[in-house]
Image (cartoon, rainbow, N blue to C red; front, side, top):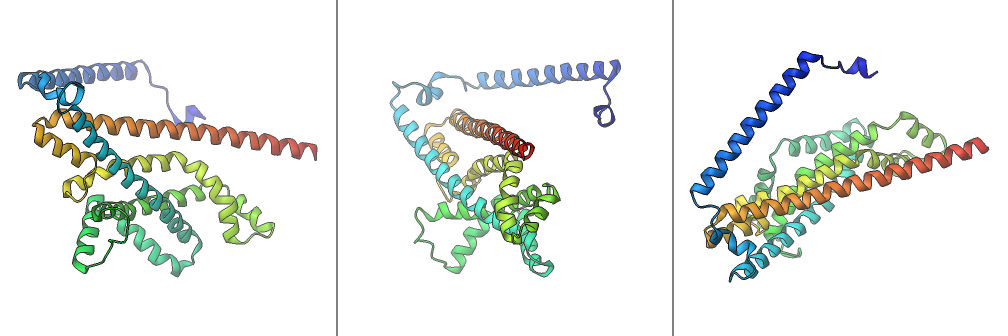
Length: 292
């Protein structure tokens, strides 16, 4: 099967690939070296610019990291709220699109296609404009208004993406799953809830985790609008006071990388556990069938 789907490259193709890799690596190293040289020439590696971030004896060290911690807390708060709402609403939208009739699906599909086509930052800005222009009172919600402008904007976009992930996960299951559930007397809704969705979530877990990482990263978009002081906004304010934007934003970027890397590893761990559990369940079912 692998020979049908993929042709093994010959000696010339491997040679061209190797030459291309070497050339690309040389170019990349050259550009990196040039960037480092320009930064050093402009004094961006001077200790006084990095001291507030890496030197505990610096007068600003504790204050800078306290402010960054507050920014990180704000980012994680917005991300957790947006992720939770997106998962719930996205699952409901995905199920509604699959279970409603032709006429009932039209508004659901319209909502999904509308928000899929909008950039996230426009969704956030539209929420802000809509709330401000109509005078909708959201003060009863915990946290600042800026937090909810961000959360609602992220939820509008990501819930429709998750809805499509859910639909694709359910549609990837063998047709016999739903047919067997209906044959034993389950309703369509019970089949979806008890048979199809649990299996689909296991299949679509990598895509879901990837989307959750996207939600976390997209919280930084609100910094452009200045509506909520999350990690990137907090880093910008710190750099304005210390006059070291490259250094502060480098640290902010590292924080995002560490968190997203941890989420990716968590996804791999959960996927392995689910796969192991699924294999164990399959072995038990096969053994029971053989014994019967």
